[in-house]
Image 1: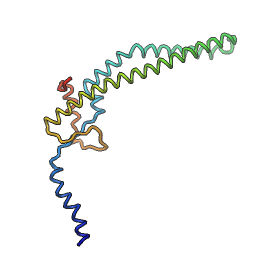
Image 2 (image 1 turned 45 degrees about the vertical axis):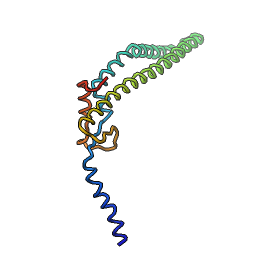
Image 3 (image 1 turned 90 degrees about the horizontal axis):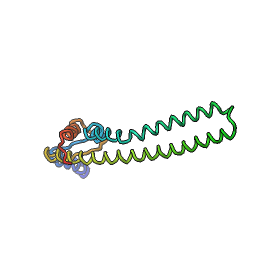
Image 4 (image 1 turned 30 degrees about the vertical axis):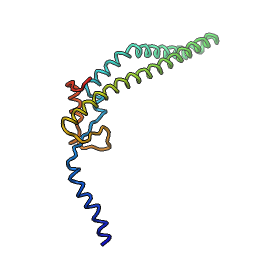
Length: 169
């Protein structure tokens, strides 16, 4: 009798909780899709590309210059005087150090700007998600999950609402 009672308790608890869970309305938002596909994200990416375009072109120019210098040194290494070779190597190393510093600064600045823009997009997206949750009476909306059913995916609604300007700025 005691074993029967132990076996029935979980079943009875599950039956008691099941109706309450059936009324819970869940939603899922794929944050990565929002960042990649929302109109704000597309505009932000273009804005950042334009903002960093000149520096990127300068870095590419210096990279080509370094490559040319190295090829010229390798090609002329046999015929070059020792002092000339040392001077060219020093010039190459100085330019390479400067290039690497500028490249590192470029990446840091680019990452900082991307993070700033993405934070603003996530803030707007979260406002839209809250608006949808309140309007459609969701109990829980998650943005990260190992698995989710397409039936509860509201990502498209969020992207559309962001495109419609539904988010308060």
